[in-house]
Amino acid sequence: MNQQELQSLRDLIGKHKRYDWLFGILGILSLMVGILTFLALFVDMAIEGLGRIDAEFLSSFPSRRASEAGILSAWVGSLLVMFVTAVAAVPLGVAAGVYLEEYAPKNWITDIIEINVTNLAGVPSIIYGLLALGLFVYTFGLGQSIITAGLTLALLILPVVIVATRESIRAIPQMVREGAYGCGATTWQVVRDHIVPYSSAGIMTGVIIGMARAIGETAPIITIGALTFIAFLPNAPFTGEPPAGPFDWLFSPFTVMPIQMFNWTSRPEAAFLENAAAAGFILVFMTLLMNGAAIWLRYRMRKSIKW
Amino acid sequence: MQVTRLFAAMSLALAGVAVSGAAAAQTYVKIDGSSTVFPVTEAVAEDFQKSKKGAVRVTVGISGTGGGFKKFCRGETDISNASRPIAKKEMDACKEAGIEYIELPVAYDALTVVINPKNDFVKQLSVAELKAMWEPAAQGKVTSWKQINPAFPDKPLKLFGPGADSGTFDYFTEAVTGKSKSSRGDFTASEDDNVLVQGVSRDINALGFFGFAYYEENHGKLKAVPIVNEKGQAVLPSNDNVINGSYSPLARPIFVYVNAKAAERPEIKEFVEYYMTHGSKLAKEVKYVPLPAKAYSHNMEQFKAMKKGTKFGGENKVGLTIEELMKLEAK
Image (cartoon, rainbow over all chains, first blue to last red; front, top):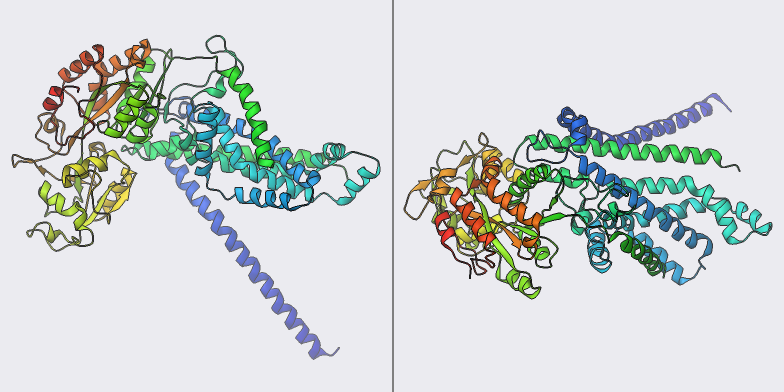
């Protein structure tokens, strides 16, 4: 190879490296659009609301006086609703996903179900609210309660959980199944001992995404009739009027953080806007905390997989 | 299919929980309805609950006047907040469900017409001028202040108002154009009154309307327009002018409706009595115009005597003074 050819080769590589570098910049810029938008909103909210956040804000009920108003009923409501959502959506979603991947025969009915599940993820959330109003509130008589809200949001995130479950099940190497079946395991044994444990990290990711969406939802919760002013907490298990059961709190009226924020932003007094910003900050913080916990769990689960 | 199986499994699970949970009963006062009445009822609920040390639980929702009546006539709520009297359709729905109610006016709200503080040519407006601005026929045609009054300059007319779902919009259109919901469509509408405040405070040629409280909190950013009443006086919205009846026709009463059957329960009775005793002070605190003391005691008598029904016969009456309101008899 002579000097000239070598030079032109170097030029070519240099040119391609420039493209490489250019794409890197483009990628960073794209990333920045999302991150900076979020940061700008977050910092703006923090500047306006941080001064309002103290123990009293977290432990007071809403009030007509902005300086006395707090978010106790809202954050407790959000937390309880999220808990019901997770308890309902995770088993249902995982079971549906496992069935579709491991059990369902590959025929047109399964195809239709698959398409439907994917489409469900795109249904506007208010539709879920309307469905829940008819089904949970009136048909099942659950009322405008925490359990209704939790189940509504569970339906909302169900498609996300199902799709995530299926994706992570597909990522398990086929040889794991073949090995297990080769040893004479039944489908249930394969699912229980291999498929679900190995895919749990991916499932967690899906659940995180779903829950993060659900905690900020307002439309379906308003549709089923969440309240705006509520200055008491649901009964802790066994503490209400006799005969108090362990699940009384499920049927309690409630409010959630986004509704409280929305109410404050539409007040005439400017001081309520500060409260709304503070509540927004706490809501983002709650989401981060929830995501953090899930990521830590996922990390623990990944470590325990041995193959 | 998968979905039906999911539902079947879930309904089974739910049925189990529902049976175990239905037994527990707390004393609740359930209130829902208009967002305009919300601040007053919220203030009462807050203090009432404190005075009862949590023995009675009060919940207040915001579904709008119409949405509130829907729930009320299904028997889901004990008290309904309403920024207008109950309508004919709602009366029928309640009657069908066997729900009777006691109608109690709790305060006045003065719809306030506002302009930008830098606007120096509008000194007052008559209902006829407001009509020329807002009537449906004005859509696309009345675009300049000069068309409203030849004395005004030829500047673009920018209108801001609440959305068509609000009771405020219903009342304003009825008072100004003579027919509820009859308005031009080409104005900036928002369900959030703070958006309207922003809009008018940023545009020197703007005009908007909303409840008095939003004007009170934004004095520096807005200027209220005196409205010419039937006697020909131009009157600014204020507590006194609403009470003496001179701010007309844009002052309107706001109500609570109490389910007559629920009113027999001690906690509801106590709540309503608390409302009538402390309503005046609390309404003032949240920037509404309280009724005179005798109106609240009149209400109390009506409530104790369980005077059922509406005094409006399913129609909204525009420009009703407090005196006239008290003289109305339930039909």
